[in-house]
Image (tube, rainbow, N blue to C red; front, side):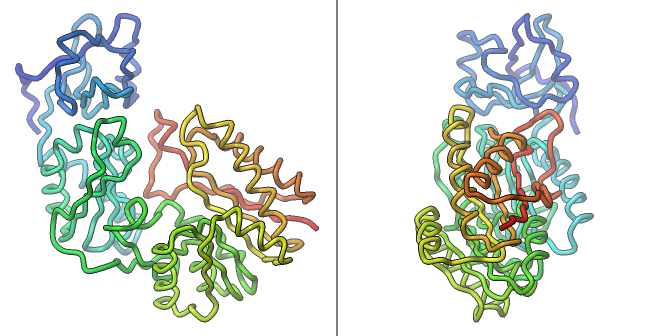
Amino acid sequence: MTTTEDPSRPVVRLRPNVDPRALRRGVPWVYADQIVLDRRSRAIPAGSIVEVQDAGRSPIALAAFNAASKIALRILDRDPGAAIGPEWFAARLRRALALREALFPVPYYRLVHAEADGLPGVVVDRFGSAAAVQPNAAWAEAHLEDLVTALVAVTGVTEVFKNGSGRARGPEGLDEDSALIRGSLNGPVEVPMNGAIYLADLAQGQKTGLYFDQRPNHAFAARLAGGRRVLDVFSHVGGFSLAALVAGAASAVAVDGSAPALELARGGAERSGVADRFETRKSDAFAAIEAMAVEGERFGLVICDPPAFAPSKSALEAGLRAYERLARMASALVEPDGFLVLCSCSHAADLATFRSACLRGIGRAGRSAQILHTGEAGPDHPVHPALAESCYLKALFFRLGP
């Protein structure tokens, strides 16, 4: 890697009241109110690679810069003279790949988990010979060709789809355009996971097509499913329900508001050999739960895996009320000594806060509860020690009394 200083590289300085030691200890972000934002720095194009200096003009690191973003600097390298190009990307990708190959026998996993894998704002999910890339920061969009070139060289994937639907792209000033940029995709991709076969639609599906982060929680829920009726609410492509069925569940009902997602779930059930025990219902989740309660439906295992009800701190209180309501309503569908799984992907709601909301809801339903297990994202979603946002997924497993 080249480490010669580039005199043409723009410089961005920290404010005098900002301690540079935090960056040297590994903090990956610098906010706009922590840097000198003058006419010169505001003129630096979004996504530019800059040298970060402390207030005394000593170089600290290399970063991606976006004056229009709340996160003005994303640290790329502690070497201020590093060259950001295909070999730099390849080195990061080789390290990420080595971890996943140690964890999984087949190439279906999250390959790059943004800052936690040294590629800020970049998500790469791998589906065998295909990969879905989310360049959710301006610098990643600007260097997408180098990233993809390195990705193909390091992993050998032949199809690469750019997904522009990431919620973080808007604040970075990026559009929502998606495109196939390598190879060809002929419909959904089959993904083996936890004994089931899932269908991931990289081009038209939600996010990158599949939620690899829930893999260990799917597996734990499947351990509880034997011989039971299962209700999978906010099911997407059947993550929990298909794993439960192949583990011996008596039957499963998947509820989701997306007809295409449920079609993929049915296709996965067919490929997994469990279609005769699988049912789908297209409905608003709360409406479906309410209707089932009125009908007297009961299940031995109920899972609720909603989208982020609290995607930001400003939405936290409303989100917690929604989690509490969901817990209360779902509890009514769980048979005595049955199991309830409640999930949150809201990084603004920490584990203790989310757990309290769930327990309030269960209590208000008149049910007692034992907490059996607390799950999180799988190890292909490593946590950056200095970035709480990278530890976002919570899955609480309860056994409910009469």
